[in-house]
Length: 216
Ligand SMILES: O=C[C@H](O)COP(=O)(O)O
Image (cartoon, rainbow, N blue to C red):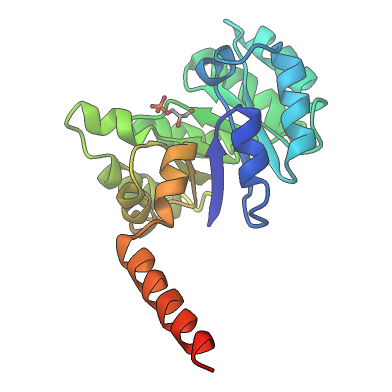
């Protein structure tokens, strides 16, 4: 399973880059818009901070614009995944990029008919936005399970990256549902390793150890 941080914040990226197993950084236009640097400067900086894939999203309004942006962005880091919106123009652009062996992710995927088109387009990833799905009383976990089964039925190698994750339990649910990858905020990533039982156990070990070495 691949695990990504969904952020463009330098401090957050520097901290998590110490985790050797992280697969990279995902971004989107809203995440980039929170930063002071230009898009290109920011993505290149992330590429220097992390040893892994850097995901960036095209903002063009038609296939041609998306394609040219994607080609340019591919040169910004050594391992770039291009995020393309799931719509007609995006499908056209993705076709051209896949031919050039560029890794493409269809973003904002919410229906199984979109999943079928993604499989036909032979893209590397799709990203269903689980938290946003759940906000509309639709079942994000179930959608990932069904999308996985569609890919299996079609013998597709397209991977599913669960996005818009709001809690560690959602990560667990998505792994059970068959997600190949997950991306989460710094806040959710930090909550993943926290447990009051771990803290209590560690406090007890420390206390016992101090007593032991003092009485030796
Ligand atoms: O780019 C994908 C993000 O995971 C979206 O997350 P969000 O719903 O918290 O904006």
